[in-house]
Amino acid sequence: MNAPPSHPSEVAWLQRLPLDPTAVSDHDAREIMRLEAQAEPRSGDERLVRSILAPVRALHDRCAAEAELARAKASVPITPPREVVPALTAAIGAEVPELAADEATVRANRILSEAEEQRDAPHERHVAAVEARLQAHETPAAV
Image 1 (cartoon, rainbow, N blue to C red):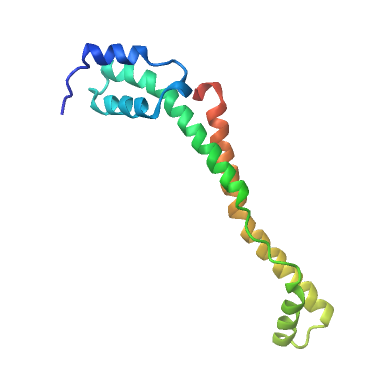
Image 2: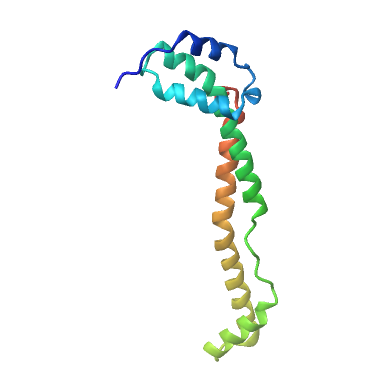
C-alpha cells in the first residue's frame, strides 16, 4: 500500500523540531514514528523522517539500556548463607557414612561454591550483555 507524500505542513513541522533529541517530546516522537510508518519505502519522505527519528531512537535505546543495567546490577542473586554448610555436611555424612567429617565438610563447601557459580553466571552474562549494548549506544557511530 502506497502512502501519500507528506503534506508541506508536515515537512515544515518536521523541520521545526528541535535538533537535540532530548528536547523532542514523547508526543512528537510518536508522531514522527507515525509518519515513518506511513512513508513510502526508500522515498525522500522516509529518509527525512528517519534522519530526524534516528537520534531520538538512539537516545531512547540508550536510556532503556541504562535503566536495564541499573535494574540488573541492583538485582544481585540471593547468596545462600555459609551457615548452611553444617546442615549440608550432615546431609552428606548421612548419605555417605564412610566419609570422614572433614571430607563431608569439604564436599559441602564445594557444592555450595558450585551452586553460587551456577547462580551467578547467568546474572553476570546478562549484566555484561546490557553493558555491551549500552557501550554500543555510546560510540559515535551509534549516534
